[in-house]
Length: 85
Image 1 (spheres, rainbow, N blue to C red):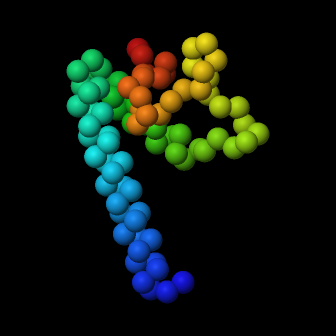
Image 2: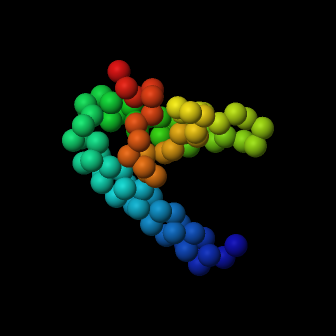
């Protein structure tokens, strides 16, 4: 791989990371309206754990109420049951 190609990949990665940061800040503002700071922290911890341990084809996915797959906070403003205290 050329230096130019590596540079483009790095820049693309930086752009994705900035987009995620912007999204997290946006949802932090929304979550702050109805969650405690500890609950918000837990949401971000769960999101990080989800990224570290991706679900493979043969592993069971976490299920929410009525058997639906729980969504990431970046997709919906839905609070995982683990956050509610």
